Structure formats: structure tokens, C-alpha cells
Image (cartoon, rainbow, N blue to C red; front, side, top):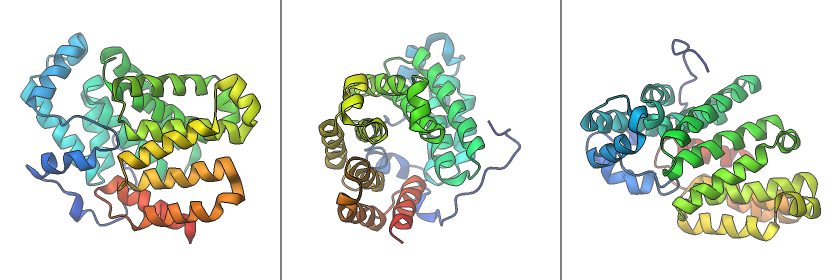
Length: 284
């Protein structure tokens, strides 16, 4: 992981609209977290996390934890990904959810060096693994692990990831997420990509026999994600990607329309602004 002293690439857009100071964060929370179902970190939630984590909770007081988590998420939403990562990482497993999301989104969009990207996704996966040990009942302990490993395997190449057994770990983590949080739209999106990427890489027959990958499952999961989060740019971006992975040129127009839709949605935070900008870049 980049040392704390080294400066991360800054968020390249205007972040004024994404400040969410004071009570604004709580008010906007349901919309901001429709995709990952992260509970709002108030004092009651902080107490529950401390009780569940036991020794991993490092003797922190609930009101302190609530405040630190709220500040970390504020930093994430306004695009200060380094501050969000560092604040989350300092809290150990209690802050892993925001830390992994911050480093993962930053690495996906704002780190150009592929080796550095891989290093960060690997670090994110380790943080998530520690969270699974300390907080196994939290849906996002498992989802962040799947997200980090999934991004790592995309950077590595899907073929290599299959050989190394990463695909099975991603699938298990996503299944564990949806068992705990059936309306987790980002997990549905990731499962859709899991099925579609394997079919694209090794074909429907071997993909189905070896990894249980099915085109119908990919389509069903992405439709669920779109239904749960119709205003989320990433759901439309990944819908386009699923169409291209499963059908190639035949669905080029439908994919372009999905990218266009994603690019036109009004971002609610820095992550969605990056998702929308990425969507627009696909159709230029």
C-alpha cells in the first residue's frame, strides 16, 4: 500500500455538492448507500459493532467510533479517498468497510499504474479478510472481500484468476453477502459479472460445468441490481458490460444506451461522479 506520506491522486471533479456536513450525511445516507446497504454509523450501530468485534474493537468508545466512521464516510463521499482510507484503516476491522471502498474506488479510477493497482486491491482484500474474522455477520465484510478480489482478478486477467482459485472465493463471498443482505445491489451486480466474465473467458459449457456460471443468472442478477438502484450509474455501466460479455457486438446498441443512461444520471457523491464519467468515456 502507498505509504501514508505519499499523496494519492486527487478527485478530479468539483466536489462541492458532495460535502454532506453535519446532519446532511444522515439525511442523504439511504440514497448514498442504496447500493451497498451499509448501515448509518450512529452510536447505536457503533455499540453493536464494538460488541460484535470483541477484542478487535481496540477499547474504543461508541460515540468516538460513530464520529470517526461518519467523518471517514464524509471524506469518501466528497472524494477525499486517501483520508477516508486512512481513517478507516486506523480503526482496524471496525473501519474496514469504508477503508476498502475508498482504496478500491480510488485504485479503479485514479491509479494508472497496473502494478500499483494490483498492490492496492491485494491490500484491500487483506483488510476485508480481517473484517470477516472479526465481524463475520456483517454483509459488507464479505462484500468488500469479493469486491477487492474481483478487481484484483480483473487486473490479473480472468484466466489467471480462475487458475489461482480466486473465482471460487469471490463467489463464496458474494453468496455470503446476499445471505445476510438480499437487497445488496452491488453484490447482485458483482455476481452478474462473475457469471458473465467466466462465460466470456471459457465458454458457457465449461463455465457452467466447472464454475456454475450461467448467462440466465448473470441477466437475472443485473436486472435485480437495476431494480434496486435505478438511479445508480454503476448498475447501468455494469449492465452494459454484462451485455457485451454475453452477447458481444449483437448487443452493442443496448450497451451504448446503458452507458448513455449511466452518464446522464445525476451523481450523488464522488464515486458516482467517477462512475458516470467512466460511462461517458465509453461512448465518446
